[in-house]
Length: 549
Ligand SMILES: Cc1cc2nc3c(=O)[nH]c(=O)nc-3n(C[C@H](O)[C@H](O)[C@H](O)COP(=O)(O)OP(=O)(O)OC[C@H]3O[C@@H](n4cnc5c(N)ncnc54)[C@H](O)[C@@H]3O)c2cc1C
Ligand SMILES: NC(=O)c1ccc[n+]([C@@H]2O[C@H](COP(=O)([O-])OP(=O)(O)OC[C@H]3O[C@@H](n4cnc5c(N)ncnc54)[C@H](OP(=O)(O)O)[C@@H]3O)[C@@H](O)[C@H]2O)c1
Ligand code: HEM
Image 1 (cartoon, rainbow, N blue to C red):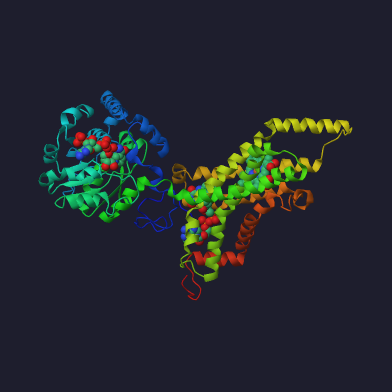
Image 2 (cartoon, rainbow, N blue to C red):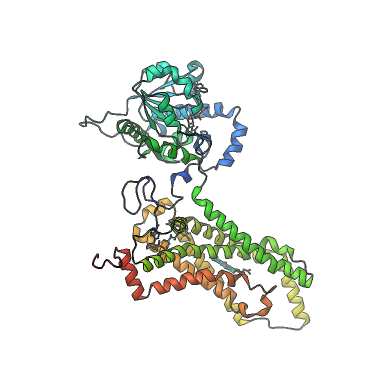
C-alpha cells in the first residue's frame, strides 16, 4: 500500500475520511516540507531557498532590505493595475440565494501591523477585491508602503471599520493591543503568527490571543503562507492555508476569504490544533531525518570497509601509496553499495508486512511501530537510493577521464609490449562489462521513472493502478536489474582469493544479502498457494472467521 501525493491533507489516504494526520500518509508529502520557516522569509525571496541560505541573506539585508523590498513590491503592484495581481486567482463564488453565506469579496478586512506580512496581505486582499483598512501605530509614516487602495490609519480607527481583522503582529506585542479590547469585542481575529522554536510556549499563540481577548472569536490561519507566497498567489509557493477555530462560523468566513485570495483552505478542526499548525513551518524536513541518517550510516560503514580494502591494505602489505583512490574510486565503490542496499530496504518492509499478515491471518492487526514508521519512510529511502545511484553513474562515467587511469593504461601497455604480448582481448571480461554496464543503465532508467512519478504533479496525473504498477512492480524490477548489474560486475571475483584483503570479502558480496532475500521472498509470495491466501487476507478475509468474504 503506497501513498500518492494526491491524498488530500485532512483526509485518510486509504479511507478518504477526514482526518488530521493518518498513519498511511507518506511523510514528506506533508505541508511541512513545502514551507521552510515562512516567518523568516521576506517578499522577493524565492520559495525554493532553504532556511539556512535565507538566514544568511537575512542578516545582510536586515538593515535596509525590508524597506527596499516593500517599495519594490509596491512599485510592481502599482505598475500592473490590470495585470496578473489585479485578477483574483479564483472566480468569486456566487452567494446569491444562500442566506447563510455572507458575500466575502467586497467586504472590508482589517490588518493590524504594517510589516512584511501585513503589506503582502494587504496587496493580495486588494487584488482579490476586498476593501482593506490597515491599523498602524504610525499610519503617516507607513501609508506610503501600502497600495493606494488600502486605507492606513490608527489601530483603533481601523478596527472600528471591520469585523474581520488579521493580527499581523508578533506574539510578544499582543499585549500592547489590549487597549483595543473594547473596540475589538465581538469581532473575528485571525492569528497569523509563527514562533521561532517548536513548542516554544506552553499555549499556542492563537490560544494566547484568545485569552487576551475573550470577547473576540480567534481563528488560526495563514501562518503556513509566507509573505512571498501572498505576493505570488496560487502560481507559486504553498497554496494551502490551514485553519482552525472553535467557531464554525468564523472558520467559514476566513476560509472563504482564503479561497477568494486563491488559496485552498484546509479545516484543521478546533483551536487545540493551533499548536500543531504553528509548528508546521518550523519543521525542517521531518520525514527525511531517519532516511538521511540511514544513508549516512551506510555510507560511513561502506566507506570505511572500502578504504581498508582499497587503500590501507596495499599500504600495509605492499607499501604502496594508493591514497589517490579515496576521492573517486573509494567513493564510487561506496555510493552504489548504499544505493543498492537502500533500494532493497524500500521493498523489505512490504515483505515483512506480508509475512505478518500471512502469520496472523489478518490485515486488521496493527504492525509494530518500527514497521509502520519504516513503511511510511519508503519514499524518502527510495529517493535517496536514486540519488546515490545517479551519483554512482556520473562517477562511473568519469572513471576513464582521470589522469591516474591514463597512467595505468600506458603502464600496462608498456609492460605488455616488453613482454611481447600482442593479444590482450579477454572475451569473457568484455562480455561481463558490456552486460553489467547495460543492466546498470536500465536499472537507473527504471529508478528515474519512479523518482519522476513521485513528483506531486505527475503522481496526480496517474490513476491508482498506474502509480502502484510503477512504484511496486517497476520498482521491484529495478531491484532485480540492480542485482543482475551487481552480480555480473562481481562475476567470479567472490571465488578469487586475491580479492579477500585482510580476509575481507569484496564489498559487493556484502550488499547482496538483503536484496536477494527480498527477491526470493517476493518470488515465494508469487507462488499460487501463498499469493491466493495473501490476496484473500488483503481483501478482508481473517483466519478463524471463515465466511467473512
Ligand atoms: C525513486 C523512488 C521513488 C519513490 N517514490 C515513492 C512515492 O512517491 N510514494 C510512495 O508511496 N512510495 C515511493 N517509493 C517507495 C516504493 O516504490 C513504494 O513504497 C512501493 O509501493 C513499495 O512497493 P511494495 O510492493 O514493496 O509494497 P506495497 O505494495 O506498497 O505494500 C505491500 C503490502 O504491504 C502492506 N502495507 C504497506 N504499507 C502499509 C501501511 N502503511 N499500512 C498497512 N499495510 C501496509 C499492504 O498489505 C500491501 O499490500 C519510491 C521508491 C523509489 C526507489
Ligand atoms: N513575514 C512572513 O513571511 C510571515 C509569514 C507567516 C507569518 N508571519 C507572522 O506575521 C506577523 C508579522 O510578521 P512580519 O514579518 O510582518 O513582522 P514585521 O515586519 O516585524 O511587522 C510587525 C508589525 O507589528 C506591528 N506592531 C504592533 N505593535 C507593535 C509593537 N508593540 N512593537 C513592534 N511592532 C508592533 C508593527 O506595525 P506598526 O508599527 O505599523 O504598528 C510592525 O510593522 C508575525 O506574527 C509573524 O510570525 C509572517
Ligand atoms: C548508468 C548506470 C550505471 C553505471 C554506468 C554503472 C557502472 C558501474 C561500474 C563502472 C561499476 C564498477 C565500479 C568499480 O570499478 O569500482 C559498478 C559497480 C556497482 N554498481 Fe553500478 N552502474 C550503474 C547503475 C547502478 C545502479 C542503479 C545500482 C544499484 C542501485 C548500481 C550498483 C552497483 C554496485 C552495488 C556495484 C558494485 C560496487 C563494488 O562493490 O565495487 N549501479 N557500476
